[in-house]
Image 1: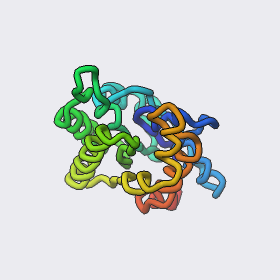
Image 2: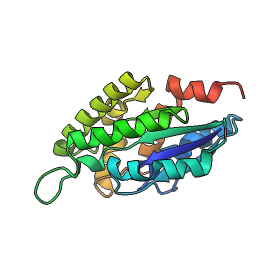
Image 3: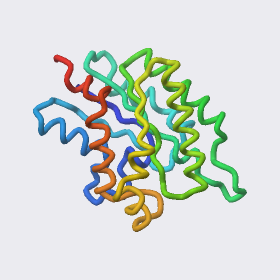
Length: 199
């Protein structure tokens, strides 16, 4: 199965000393279990949902067009909530959701789609906006019939995710945190349905 992981620096795995991030670790687990998975990491550091919406289709079509074994995992939103010098977020909640819903709708017309919600950062002001965005993404996925995985509570309670962010650049965990996120996705029933489907 060829899978495009599309999103921001958390998809890229910024801060991971092994340069795998959660997507690389997740697919490595599947390959170790004998599954033939090809990973396309299409995360771009600093991008908002609007930025991702401008590029996802061209990048996906280059890798998946004409194939029956392709899928897309979308994960973004933290950068939308980052604060500009004037104290406002980079995108309003409505702007984020407009870009997100358009992207999810279009992508699901072409390939199977899974959506992984934005993670916490350990910074109270941003996290309030991120949590609200995650909740809205989940509601939008329910309306569109797309699987959504909220990682909020699990990562907030993690002994590694936020502590590694605090010890690092203040925004991204190290490999241990990404490993925890990979394990959360690994047991997600929607992901397992992809991996356990007959070839």
